[in-house]
Length: 487
Ligand SMILES: [Zn+2]
Image (cartoon, rainbow, N blue to C red):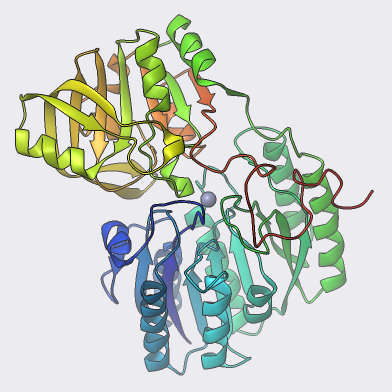
């Protein structure tokens, strides 16, 4: 047997001014055939899972390109078509194959393409024909369209948010694809539209227990091959935005439909109560100041580059300064120009610097301060599980007000405390750590902190669907409509 594997992935916030082109992919991951590293990235885990399994089986694996861009604004049309056609050409050259394995994200939107993944799957299907296995791994923060269901045999999303299980799900995908290639199963996909959009962290209830029930259904029912929850991605203005349940059965569509509907309505009942408490900046900073814990983590949930925004907001930093906080470190603020200025000034220089607040009027003004350039690190990085996440050239600056800030030049959300230590700041040695992430930070930061406070500064991410100006989303979904199921 022989299969082809490739990955094209990013998450598109259609409201973000940080547009995505080839340089965005090159800055995060662009690995032509044979150059994918030994460690998986979030969306390229099928490479690693397939290498391991196919080596055991003695099957042939042809590797195509893997490309990932940090979530951002609309993808440049030529960039998308270039990457897509590059992979399709590699697939044509590899033919005949028995299977195609893809690492997609599922929320990629390019200029002229609302459903990039549906487009890719449809073209792959055209090339390989109806009998070849087409399987793709997805991020749950994605959109599930009919075109994807029509053209894939197997779609599996990460279950966990934070996405700690991306490699486990890739292994599951590869295993089911192997069984399908051998003719052992006949996958039938059943999808249910929950008609809602919500933030659904799985580290806490109700999602924690919900996932346990999902796993029990998978384990107890031989006809159920896999269950995924598509959380949806509220910053993507596309017709199919929203939460869905996807059940894959072994040729038991009626059973799959029933399970998808039951789980979907249960998810709908979680609306408005699935997230941890979010606090406004003034309240959050006051609580952190008063806390005896060390460090206290303030998570800026709506300036999370992982949701496609710039990551250069200064709103909460201003609140720290306003409340006289001194024993704090901020990781990170994206500002490649300020990084360049600091690099030129050199370590030890005391300079007047304007940083942050450059890309979005809702994210606060640039900050002007006297700072000392404490450390310059070329090609800095941080960890996320097994993967290494680039931060680009980065600097540690110490503001005269007493707050340390890391400025980075490749956008990334805050995944792990080593983003501080890699720049020379001991995260255990600060009272307050301000980071930018919605939930992916949680596992790694909970290991060093007993107090994590989620901060809702309201911007720049389009965080309230009731006020977000969607143009392509026309379906009735909660919270835009109170009773979208009409009961
Ligand atoms: Zn995600």
